[in-house]
Image (tube, rainbow, N blue to C red; front, side, top):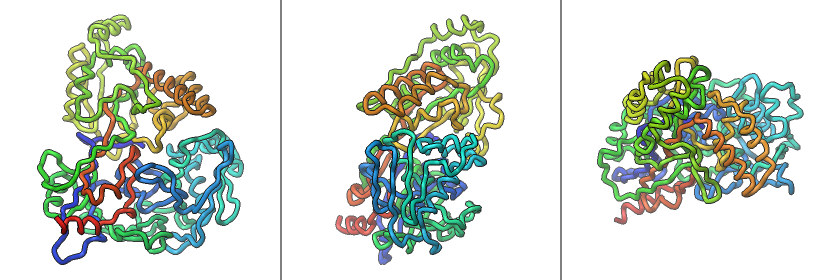
Length: 517
């Protein structure tokens, strides 16, 4: 999913104690950046929404917060065919939405069809392209809905038929976008959450002076095991307000929104958790010189890449975080002389004749943007910086002619290189660049029918081809920073997808711990 970048992306949990004589062991006070939440689980746009919506929406399976292994959720069990092309899920008995409406296999079928609706053009539909005829149906190719590979076998059984094996299928099916939908939710005013039937352990309980409340969903199938009964979500415009709440013990958890330069005295443990996520710059010009690969290569070589990547976050020379079995070598390095030579060969000596280069950034005063502006300016290129007034509209580029390159970030929805590469395919709705490469598309397509090391090698070749096009400038890999009590550390879990489960936390253990020290 696309995400917004602050100066340093952080996730911090800070719990300082509780008011004398008041049992707050079942209340969790969560601080987030102020934003307008669209409560549609199929339109999640950032990691704040993913964290929050995972608590009110639940699907067939959930992921273990420590291992990411699939666990039973609304489905109590499942079976997989020997060829890995058919998944059958068996729902629990007596499942209900928060409004008392029964949850059935039809509720999940309804959700899938809405996500794939060819009239909505939801980019998240690409999560399901491994399902038979799902891609063709979503793209409006005239496929009858009954030919989509999702079948309701009976009230409690739903089956997914795949066109190719997908080793990441459980991680996809656990996404809130695949949670069930009640018939009363279609159509639905998603910005009015009081009327939404929720399927997860919590439900929306109304606004407060500082934000809103989530309360335990008493009709949730495992409600008696939910220890945190209330989540008090507090929204802040400036990080200093969040810090003040932490110091005054009015906030238990500040998620990606606190000022790390201000001291906050706690006895907690800092845990750095690298996400399967990247921050990079993307050339989006679709015509003119900046749409030419050789010009883009020259621009990359003109940059002091090492300096730009010294942000305190893990350095990224590739798009995808490397693993033991997957790695790629970036083809370009800083070389001012070579960059100027490439510009000259392309007909732009000393940058003469190149149009103004416009950088779209999250922050006007980002030091990296200023370094890029200076480096390209020294090469004779006029550079302007543009920051949208409303960050909610950051990725809604109405006039691509006016933007040359934009700061971007991507947090993978599943733990597989394909979670980064799929969006660069020629027909992806996420591909806002002019990168259209038949060989790249073929590498991705062929990888679906490979396994193990062969599959990863094919994906690595695809990433290498993408990087060689110079459409992407990798910068950093993103991390979560968790400041947690030892009493909570084992329950919180940390993983590359940032999966957190509020219903698994036991705050009472925290207070017992703090009373004992």
